[in-house]
Image (cartoon, rainbow, N blue to C red; front, side):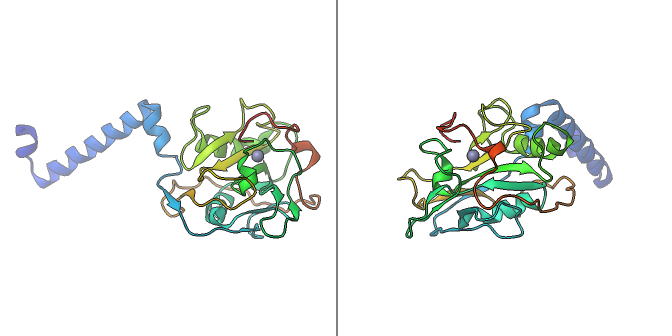
Length: 232
Ligand SMILES: [Zn+2]
């Protein structure tokens, strides 16, 4: 107690600085604390009505891809920081019209793709081998899921290295937590991360829109029919 009660303001600042250094050292020494600093940060539940909408041009994607409107701010945040290219979002008959969009029959039953609350991601430029272009995608995957099968909120399933049909050189799957309910309908709520409070971004290389095919996912990145994971 004497140590802290007998300090000058200058001494207090020095001790505070030393304490901060000690905390930083502690965070570096404990993986869970270090990981927290690079996690998606605070999340919130969005109860407002969502719609399955086209992905905006500012988020690189294959023509025709759609997602639930409520995850677009998160996708904008990610696209501004990682050189992503979305190869599939919503998959199934559109609520209302019934017109099919997205990958046809290539996601498992119960997939977040059937709610418009998942995206499949490859790098820009895309390659089919695990080369240097995939490094930022690997960083994104670790940001979303630092430890296998323990995704950070708001994600409920992250498919990458260690998951069949996913990984470096194949694709990254990000799925957002949402209310249970019937597939091919808009979920009553979805969990999202706060785009203003997330960790600072790593540098991003300038993306160039690739000459991708119209709609769906490329043949290279289509997960096996029937899917490996229930969340694929
Ligand atoms: Zn997927």
